[in-house]
Image (cartoon, rainbow, N blue to C red; front, side, top):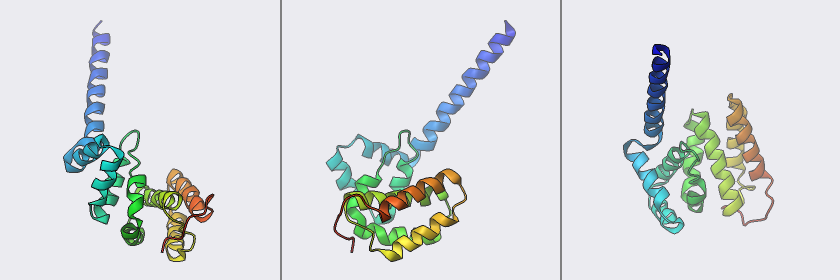
Length: 163
């Protein structure tokens, strides 16, 4: 009987800790509150709200939204802002060390290339992204980023070039 009570208490403690941790990993702090607010908005409201942020902040909101389960997929909401985002992505490719964020930036390139404009002619950006993917060590992120980069370089529909 005591053993069963001990196991029950331990299980409840673990569940409580997991709930607390998962909530704070995604919902604590100003970014978590901002992501939650964005997720409650309509599509048009979300597009407008994200467009009002600086390109760096848009990218950070995208990264933060990727922590949610399921992910917020903000890359499709910030993709229309590609003109201001691409210089920031190039800069972050050169300075970012998180493979998850690097893979997410390649996924953003995919979102841009399938919804906005073709990046095939952007050799500067694609060469940089290729070098980033080649250096990745974490297998899932490297595999995802390589697949996304392939989608960018081999588009299935023709869009005007991103210039």
